[in-house]
Length: 108
Image (cartoon, rainbow, N blue to C red; front, side, top):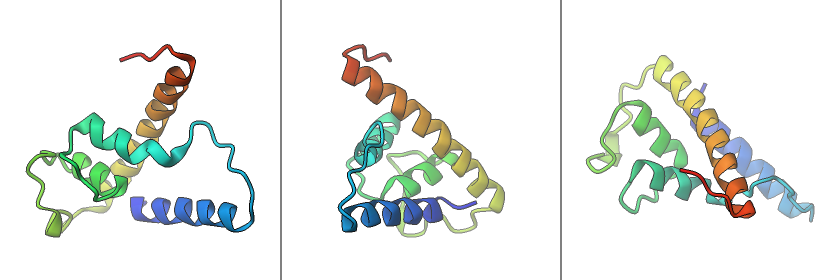
C-alpha cells in the first residue's frame, strides 16, 4: 500500500492515453484532484502533490506547519495503508463535488 505507486500508475495511464491519442473520458477529470485536496485541508499553496498531502494529513500533521524535507520519516506500513484508504474516500468526495458543480448543484 503506497500512494506514490498509485500516483505513478495513474500518471503512466494518463501518459499512455495521450501517447495513443485516446480521449480520456473519465468523469470527473482527474486534473483538479490536487487542488481539491490542497483546498480541502487548507495547505498553503503547496505543490508537493496529492500523495504527499494525503500522507501528511493521515499522519496528523498540521497543513500549515509541515516541514516537507523529512516529513515522512518513520511512516509505518499501517499509515501508508490508511493513506491509501483516505485517497479512495477523497476520490469519492471529489467525484461527487465535481459532478455537482457540473450540474450546478454544488453541496458543502
